[in-house]
Length: 312
Image (cartoon, rainbow, N blue to C red; front, side, top):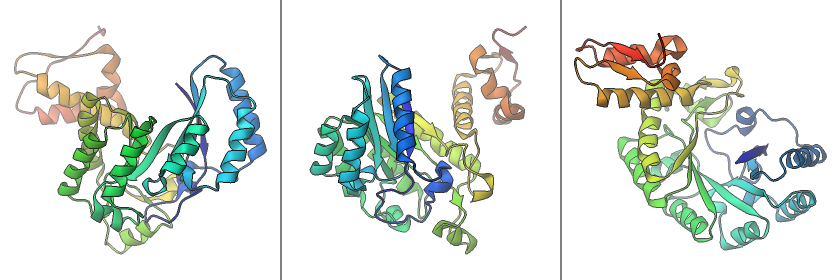
């Protein structure tokens, strides 16, 4: 599936969450609708007879003025083909039968909910405008209407605990989305969370904790047919905008490396060389052999003889 992303930073949002600066995260400037329509038309023409989606990210799409949305989709409908659908992101408190009827009428296929966290206390501490029950009911309603459901979660939000983490695991299985995005909480300059961090009232996850929590989510999600489509904020973020937190452009690769060495640990037996798949060499050898060193440390009581398949 081809995706053409359109970023509308904070459009349609009903409140400002403590961690949020969508402009910094998406690295987008002013919105030029005429240029957007020209770019979308080119995208569609280049990819005739291929399944594709035009995806609206960065804000709460169902919170945007309905007349503007309708006029935009009407303009796009003049050049899209039958293989083109739409994907939108929005907030759980902006999901209703009226909004979903509009989405059905306008070829929306996938709705991604910025749930961020299912635990009520964490939602309140993060400035979200809904509670656990509303988040779950929004997921159910989207599934009942026949849309593909995506969920975005943010490990490490203010007020998180092991209890809230376990609750999120249960809610993920309960709502059973097709897609999951994992964005560990980052402290962005000029946000309310940055003030909380500077006042020592908020402590972000360490890199290791963020990687471990995301790896746990993947281990839970993938056997239950939930596809993890993104881990970590995009690499377009300016490093100068990041005050603190587990941000790295290769964060997703770190999680996959962690998952791979967990798998090796589970299979390893003393005296048997570890054989690494040729297409997974980089997971151990990349970033200065970071995860090879971690594996050796975790298995420090054994002699490790690692064979790289396909290598002399």
